[in-house]
Length: 270
Picture 1: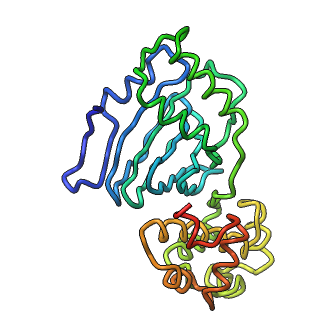
Picture 2 (picture 1 turned 30 degrees about the horizontal axis):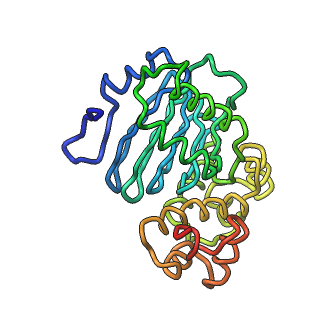
């Protein structure tokens, strides 16, 4: 059992020295399993090793505050690839069974940026089996061969569209923070421009440059990310649709189906 340091509120977790020591284990892949309650927050922290952060249960929202960062939501059957050296925090929605693989710098050919990836049934079973392997496993034995298969699988992970980029420009950042606080706000970019003291053309250009998408696409992506969190918390589909500013439940379901291939009522059930 890994020891944990819990704040007086029970809402904050910091890796203990035992957890941090896992990064010094002389193995290419080191597993770690920790369970968290709903609403738990891991404050900003950095690991030297790259990680594959997976939840066998529950939803995690990972925040990277630096330029080029943003928010990543990780629902079931998805994982976050996190390169080493990047500060990030994690918020739990629902009871979360976090299963993490730490990878040494000696492992080559893996991504250099954060991304949500799909976890195949095979990789899921490999991850869960890896959690039963001791950190100092025999690299030439069955455990070492299993970890080698894990590494092979990590090189072919499909990327999922679950990233919400956050702009660095202070005007855009203020608009994005306001929208995240109330995603039912349907005001057009022109109205936001008057509030921010910038023209529509200026804001549109900045949105493209700093997030790689237009204003409407960014707001839709923000709603998609929040929808997954709300649905994971058990909110009814109808309530989620109206909480996110959709005029009808059917419009929300159509958006969700375009993104994930199934309606929201089936997503977590499957």
